[in-house]
Each structure stands twice: as C-alpha cells, then as structure tokens.
Image (cartoon, rainbow, N blue to C red; front, side, top):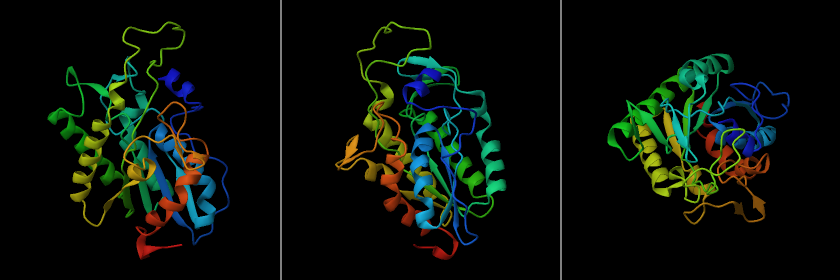
Length: 270
C-alpha cells in the first residue's frame, strides 16, 4: 500500500488526512464533508481551496487506503496487499466524524477498492461475483446509514474510470517487475466501474429522500472513457487513479458544489 501512495505523491500522516489550509467559516456556510479513499482525498484538496467561494465549510475526512469494502487482502497492481487496519473500523470513524462536524451534506466517493480483486470469505473474487456485489451493496447501505445519522443528506458520487500504469506498484525495496507486469490491471476494467456505479444507484434508490446519486464519474470522463486532461486542465494524476492536487478538485468545484448545495436542507443554492 505504501508504494501505491508514494507513487501517487500522497503523504499519509495518519488514518485521516485533512484537506489543505482552512479559511474561517461563517455560521451561514453550508457544512459539507467528504469521505472515501485516496481518490476522494485528492479531489478534496481542490474542493477545500474552492469552498469559500461557495460559502461552504468543507472537511475532507477521507481514509487513505480504504473503500467501503472491508475484504482483505486486496490485489492491487498485481500485488496482494492487506488493507490498513483502520479500514476495518471505517463505520465507527465516520460516525465520529459526523458527530463532530454535523454535516448538512455528506459526500461519498468510493469505487477504486471495490473494483479490485478481493480475498473474501476464503477465496479471491471480484465485483462481477453476485455474492461479493451484494456485500458491497450492504456496505454502501451501511455508509448511508452512518453518514445520514445526524440528518445529513448523502451524495453518492459515481466512480470515474481508471488507467493505472501497466507496471504494478511493488512493495518498498522490490526493484524488479513481477511476473505478468505487462498486463493491464484488473481494477482498471471499465466494466467493473460500470458495475460499481450500477450497484451504487440501486442502493441509493432504497434510501429515497436521503441518498442521491451524483453522476460525477461521467463528468470526470467526458466521452465515456478515462480522461487525464480536460480542456487545458490536467485533472488526473499521472498514476491514472487520483486527481491532481489541487487542480482536479478546483476544476470539479463549479460543477459539483451547486449539486451538493441543492441537496442541503432548505435547498441552499449559490
């Protein structure tokens, strides 16, 4: 896992890594929190920069290395990785964050870990397996329960596509490429992202008035395929997974914030 994060240029100083410098919030600002893994974390940096323009008090509570799935280990880049221990307790961690911040809108961006091969119930599987897909759905439902516990509306961002390099991230200290390194990663299969987003939509439909699907993936992938650059903006990191910091989130903010503010109680719009 460490090699993956280092390759992405992300410095993890703990389980929760907050976004960039804060600007004093007004009591009238809409409170929005973001959760998810490192993809959410990198998006959150730019959203944090742009938050004052939208009268938003923003907190990035993403857990680096975690999805909603708690299967472990995961096959990432052709290398099995045990997930971080704190990933097993994400419901308790996010419940604490909700109780502390009292968000009006809670945003979840997951999917990267959910589309990876996972060791689950004694065997390797993936999101195409109906049993594992049902498990992911149950964890998404749990996330909605946790995030909405204080009355917040929950925004479920659809996952974007991924295009990691064909050389896998190796454990620290390993210099040579492992067998099979010249293949595309299973977790970059666009079909898996489509499947995850279908599950996301089905789960959201079971929480009317609470959870809303926001088609962020389609916005980040115009034309229906992975986009590293949109117009003049490099929105995705060279690793093909994360968003550029802070440009990716800054680019997303004018599209995303109005949609999130419309979900807030009283339908706040800026």
